[in-house]
Image (cartoon, rainbow, N blue to C red; front, side, top):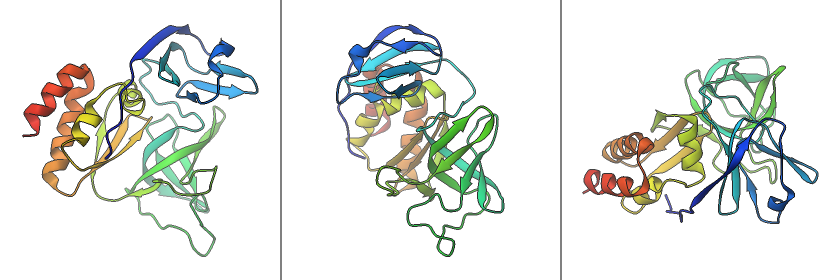
Length: 232
């Protein structure tokens, strides 16, 4: 994993679903994270919480416990069933998600991935509606490439809070960067409170798992001390 530069986080204001964010943040190059959507020239909040920015990235920090899928979010799911033209996927929400057989890079009716119940996948939420089951896809819709989506082979899954996953994705915490300076590993971070990790050795998987688990309540200085103790 390549380490990335951490940027200071700024808490802007408390927001509610339906609130419109000032047009001052609609400058070119910004990234909208969880809890924000853009329709035309307006950016609207979809969750209650605190509007936070880190560099050019904006998102809503919330204390919600159960995962509520939103279009565009990345999730780590587990295949739980199979229908006529789709798989059922457990993503930790109130309703299981649907993953169509053709929602993969270069998939056709004759050439499509074959999954078993219990297999792990990394996917993108392509449709989220309160009146319908969420729908997933395993490719980037902008270029139709997999780009890391699909079946997750081996490794293990760490279950953590939704807020911690937000911190990992927005690089608010330095734990991934610190571990990446010492160990080789892969991460797939889901907004549904699941983090899949893999490495060449069981020892490294165990080290990364324990470090990520312990770092959830630590600041960056404490993360640095933790990594120095765990990884000799």
